Image 1 (tube, rainbow, N blue to C red):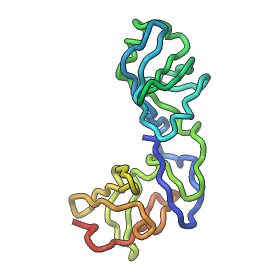
Image 2 (spheres, one colour):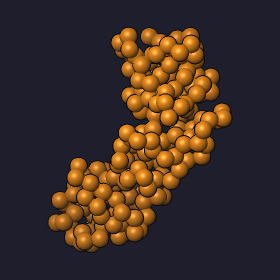
Image 3 (cartoon, one colour):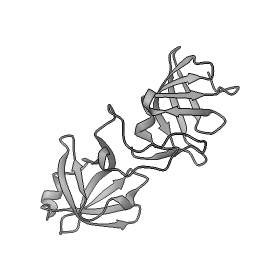
Image 4 (cartoon, rainbow, N blue to C red):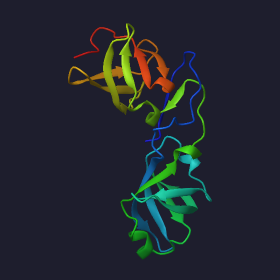
Length: 187
């Protein structure tokens, strides 16, 4: 997922993925052919669909096969995309249900204190007193703020709101997040 989470307190800038992060990020999932000119519907799985532009190289499927975007336009909640060299419904059908990726080294940096979700998943979570709680395994997007899903070392999971009251510090270089445990956050 290439969603972004924000922090408002003073932290080091983020944007370039540290070593060990994925090489590719999912931005969409191809669905069915549309029309006779090689277009297909794509479910958009990124917060930044405006970055999928004509001429951009994206990568399809588990083999990350590169394709250049020939056209793109909105069709309701879906995006219609076409790729160079894929010109008819039969060719399009070969890519149905494939994920669409971009390279992490090609994504733009975020503002200071903002992080892509893939930069947070896998970070170790520690309390204010440096006690290890567990590891971030997912991020849930809600209407008000994101929620970090943490697999606890003691078993089970905790849902930690991505707010200034709870998230005290994110240190990507140490792969760590320091949190304040408010009453009721642990099971």
